[in-house]
Length: 218
Image (cartoon, rainbow, N blue to C red):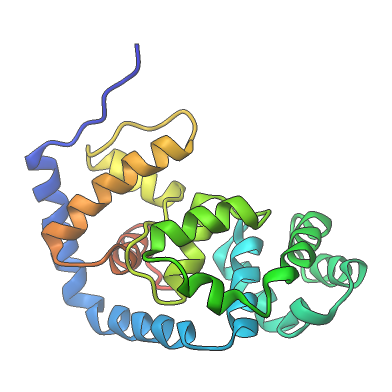
């Protein structure tokens, strides 16, 4: 029998209390980071594409490593051949250099029109559906990560850190696999938390990630 998701008012209140304490410590940093994301969202399609490449790199890899590689390669995401890009990714220590290079080069067909494409959607969830369908290497998490990093505040980035926290707080049971259906179910739980806390999903992610890792990255 399929397990039911837990979501009791007391568990939610406990998390909100912990969240409130964290907000007292890092609210200015989170506000600054969200402003940076919004500013990036007004950049050229090429700049947005480089952020998309960062999110392709972070799949089954670390955010810290993705940031380091993104800074090192920069415009090379737009210009290097697939072979050259794979070589650079390998030199920089990525776990899957050939696969990620292939995904990035394939995604270049959108590099010069990405801003216009995204602006055609009414919200982040619609844009995410398009990204997952059309950009190889982007799942629900990676597409949400990209959108949050360019200023969208209505999608949740659900990785193992967030799942671990929600399981520990009693708000969900651990999913065997994170299917799209399960992803959206967990996202709906996070929407309840965000609404109660007066936050967008993008902001909430930064706070929850800090609670799990002690870091505010991107």
